[in-house]
Amino acid sequence: MMFSKACEYGIRAAVYIALQSLDNRRVSVTEIAEEIDSPVAFTAKILQQLTRNNIVHSVKGPTGGFEIDREAMDTVKLSKIVKAIDGDKIYMGCGLGLKECNADRPCPLHDKFVDIRTDLRTMLQNTSLYELATGLEVGLTYLKR
Amino acid sequence: MMFSKACEYGIRAAVYIALQSLDNRRVSVTEIAEEIDSPVAFTAKILQQLTRNNIVHSVKGPTGGFEIDREAMDTVKLSKIVKAIDGDKIYMGCGLGLKECNADRPCPLHDKFVDIRTDLRTMLQNTSLYELATGLEVGLTYLKR
DNA sequence: TATTATTCGGACAAAAATGTCCTTTATTAA
DNA sequence: TTAATAAAGGACATTTTTGTCCGAATAATA
Image (tube, protein in one colour):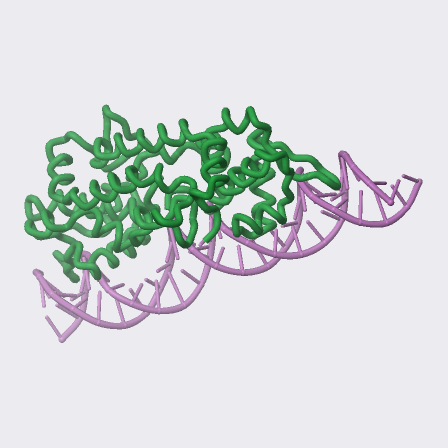
């Protein structure tokens, strides 16, 4: 809808990892892909990006897997994940695709987009993994179907 | 950012056609592509979609080209163009890509998206080509760069 | 130390989006 | 009626996104 597939999987994966990390469970790619209903190998690739960007932490070998420490769950906001995977064009770029588009030289939709984009950016910058994970934990929200 | 490239070109093209139709000028694909800075042949394809969906009107042969009658400029809202080219997934689909996602069975981002998506939909449903074309005419907005 | 379970990384494959080219069809005007 | 001009439409080409596969690196444990 708004994010790339990769980014959707990335967010879902991160939330699932956070959820499991809440009770100290490290999870494997296989489990993640299963639980968020995503292609395993592709998910693995995306998890690599998340690890390189210090959004999740990975451990190799048996008993290894992915985890997020309690502090990171609070400090990592959705904006960081989105930026790592899709860049920040969602709320930076012009809605009509112009190279240059700003208050001085706006596209016909510029003004109408300003509020929407600001709201989106604000939301992403204020939403932490912890918040999303706890919603899941309580059974209020879902990651599949 | 939010729309496909095809949709961006489609909106820009429609606005340009509307602008020219304001003083009864019919315009060719070549001129349109020039003025909105888009690939000619690809733009032609998109214009076919717009014509099939009765968003613009086309005339073949010499002195032919594209036009929009004054009434259509008012009744055609952006939502119609977006729907014709991208479908309505922008404000219908789940932000995290779940098949099923609604108030009953929401994804973790569902609630946070509701307002943003509603605003977007409302904006698209209320913005007419006439409105955008006149902004251009007065020199307040731009379609290039 | 050998085996096994796991992530990492690179190369490859498939699908979708973007973009091009060329022929056909309609229409105007000389 | 013929030549010229424009959109329509189909086939093709390129690029990007999505997705797969497999060997290498790492670490736990028997």
